[in-house]
Image (cartoon, rainbow, N blue to C red):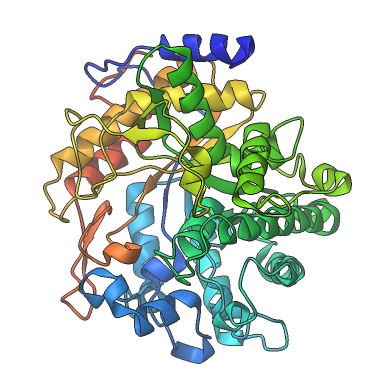
Length: 496
């Protein structure tokens, strides 16, 4: 571990790990608050009005055993038919913006522009107009995991052709909606798209090709993101005056001790889990993190491959991808501890074998309804400092953060989660000087939570999935967040 990284970790580790009462300091006046959802998780109407089939439709219908209770997003929250009710909920919360995604298949049923579904276009135009009329800025994600099934039939994201196909889709969206949309995100959590979808096979489209599939997938997505950025920058920004980025995800990885080995293991985890996507775009050097390049090349050679399983960017591609952002978006929920360990034995290739670290979560940490989500608010402050220092002090927008439970209206654990994480965020802003401009709660309402189906709930609003009207009711945490947005304060009275 080089000296600069060692000093960085010592500084970050020195940040306090104890949070007492919620902060009584106010968020900056220009700080913005929002909430988020994703198309497949809330819209429903899976085959209505000309919408095409996407990989999550296909996955849940053909592999019902892959989702708890065989749940699907066929109806979900029925937002396709009840979007005006969603707008009323957003207006009641007083949010500055709403982050949601477009269903590619609802706009382009085949994935290509040979067929444009006017009903789908009208739905999004009406929805975006309703948001704007109520003073709510749309933050639009082009791709949130729901690839049109016809594009999966030609190989999905590991197929380099999807770079061009996505570029055409992005241009179509900018043309159709860009007059009113000023904040765009190309992809949501490409690490999850690639690792779960094409590596581990645990999510749609369910391809198990670990050690190869996820890397080929990410290689295409990085180039597709850059294409969309340049299309917007050159063709649309001069008249639409918006901005564009990509949404990445990571937890904080805390070294199990202050030993150089554990600190190196924690840094390696961050580079594989976050730097894999972030380094090519945000780092001044571009390209994948050097630790990934070196380790995967070495293990590939020992495994008998003729070249590294990690694809290489050309010098021109590195330059084309680097700097393709206007702000940095991060989804973050929890923290893990990391210990150094001997490299995994050479054998079956795999992402986690390439990382070769030992991760765990402290059993004393409070949990949630999701086994992976422990309540560790101090991890957010440390992560934000690491991002700030690693990527040269970018503007950061937290595009997802939230807590899962069983969906009860009285939800003090979620309320406390928000109070504690927002306190950690405020400390990063006011005490550390990290440039965070916005915070997005996940989620506006209970919804389809991927392979967990409807068994875990993240919403500020409860949804009655047994009622055909999908009745929404605000929770205690929703009322709390509403007050935070109005006052920019986490307690009853803040210091001015």
